[in-house]
Length: 151
Image (cartoon, rainbow, N blue to C red; front, side, top):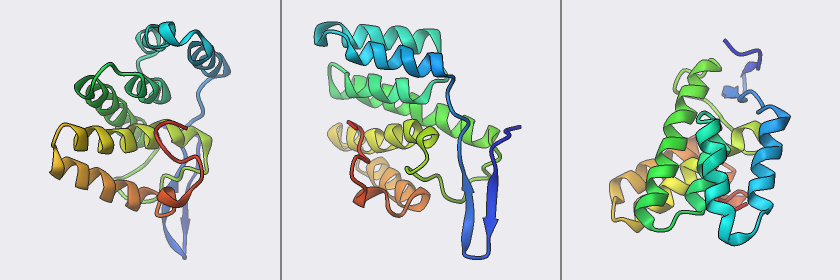
């Protein structure tokens, strides 16, 4: 069980904040993303292979995908791994998971990427479900500066 709080408030649903990634993982992903453009996808893929529960690495791999199907697959894995992490953190299927908390961004980035990738491959129903889920998790997500799959 997580040490992160699930806050209950009289003003709304509970809020979940994922555990932060270890600094060495953050550094590994940052280094992979800072490398030469031609090597970035392989470098991020290596981070994912070494740390398959690292949500933001899956989301970044989706951003670097060679085509829409590859992007869809990476974002979908990141999304499902994220649901697992949320449940491990005490999330019960409802409540906020806000972008303002850095540890939540990999999951939200993967969910938003899945929404866009679903649209790109014609999965209209899944696109709509992702958009609705994202709005439920963080109602302010769409209006946030920097809250997108590429940021």
